[in-house]
Image 1 (cartoon, rainbow, N blue to C red):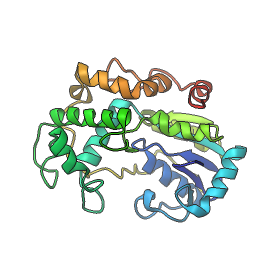
Image 2: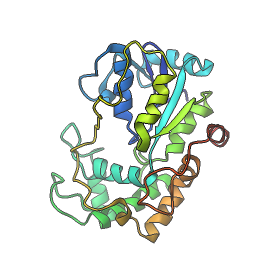
Image 3: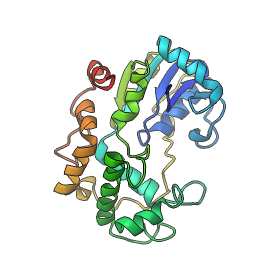
Image 4: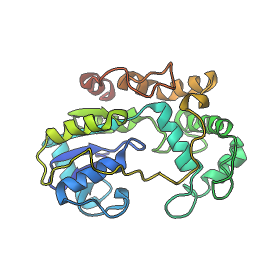
Length: 272
C-alpha cells in the first residue's frame, strides 16, 4: 500500500501526511517555501515538481525509504470533526471547483435526486436552507463511510484517523500531531525541529485556502447545524477522531481541543 497522501520536501527536511480539510494547502506551501524561498505559484495540490509526493511515481521510493527508516521529522495536522465536515459540505458539495465544474461530476445531481439536498442553484449562489441540506448530506456521508454506498467514502469526509493510520500501519511514526485551531504554535514546533534552507515566519505568511470562494458562505454558527440526531451520526462516523484528538463531542460550538494529542496512544490504536 505504501504511503498515500504523504508529502516530503525535496531536501527531505520533513515528511507530512496530508489530511484533507486540515490546513493542507498552507502546510504544503510552507514546506515548498522552506526549500525554495518562494511559494508555489498556484494550488500546491497541483504541484508536480519542487516537492516529493506519493502520487508522483518518481517520489515513491524516496518517500518509502525515508519514512521506513524515520530519517526525517514526520507530522500531520487535525481539525475539529464538526467544522471539518461542514467545510467539506460547503466546499465540495455546494461549491464550484477550480475547473469551473461541480465536484466529482455527477455526485451533486445524485445527492439532489436521492437525498433531496439543495446546493444554491447551478452556480451555488442562491439562498437555500443550509441546515436542512447539510443534515441530509450528513446521512449520505454516513452511508458512504459505514456501508460504502452509494459510493466509496471521499477523502474529504472520511475520518482523520483513517488517513493518519495508513502512515503508521505501513511502517511510519509521527513526531508531532497538531491542531488546525492552534496552527502557528503547532507548525512552529515542526519548524523548530528541522533544518530548513529558507526560514519561515509564520506570523507573516498568508493562509492558503484552496476551498475559499468555492461555495456559499456558512450562514449560521457551527452548533446550529447539529441537532441531537446529527450529533449521533457524527459520533457514529468520527468517534475515534474525537477520542484520539481530544475534541469536544458534547459541544459542537467549542472548536478547540480539550488537551494535547498523546502520540503513544495514536500509534498504539492506529497501528493495529
